[in-house]
Length: 325
Image (cartoon, rainbow, N blue to C red; front, side, top):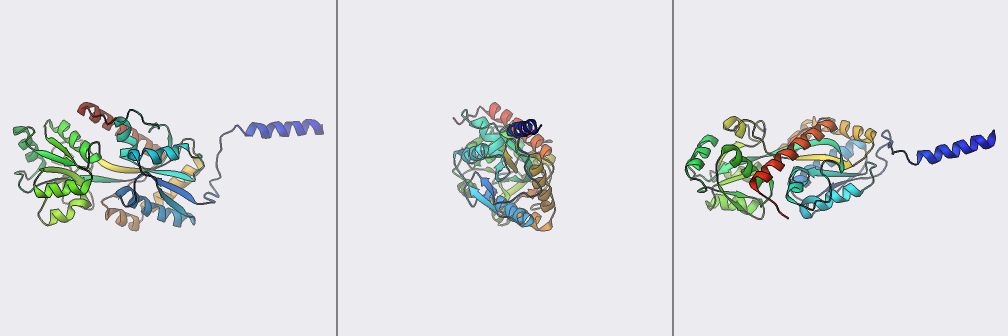
């Protein structure tokens, strides 16, 4: 009997080695958590990630380390998290460019944006604002569309670079409005804003904080924001959807993910704490200063939102005939 019991116990232990890890959500985290930001320090994603990591670390009483792993349009950081242990100690602070846009532009994406990661929570959104040079004779989105229809390719729109959200927002705008404008890509937001102020280009879709001072000074004219609803940072501006194109939406968004197969208990713990954080006035004010608004919700909600956004940009990129490599 003793030998049989011992053999049964050994067999039971061997069998459990092949079961998926469930993680101990009650004691998590027991060591520092690494939050990988696949962009350089100082950018919008990095700033938002540091706000969120700081508050989450305070809630957990643990250290959250922001790890900037930039390169290849975010692929380097995403690949690092994809290959990490699915134990909740390596997380990805991903953006729409990494998970919705770049996979359509690259034929050699090493990760599956919809299957290589475990959704945790939708962190927030940051819309672009549609601005024009003051010399453009349009006081509204409808007037801008009418002007572009009369003069195809006469208006030039700037972007932060080919394949960036500012570029694709312009492509989406042209497709939905049935117009043509000349795309002029720049190496980043700063030169695009400078050339729009100078009048070398007429139209720009930009993050609001990058153009707000110039708008107040009268150097740029803001017509609308590209989010689904008006934003707290510029409540006086209508959305493109309400101004002219119903259903139009284009926002940079951020989501927190883990490697595929992360334990459900740890996902729930992270999601619960972050939803609490996103409801606090402090985090809402800090994100608003960066032109962003917190979102929250369930992991399933993030997965559904991500899928819809991925499909939308795939159609826009296909219709525009864009392919980076």
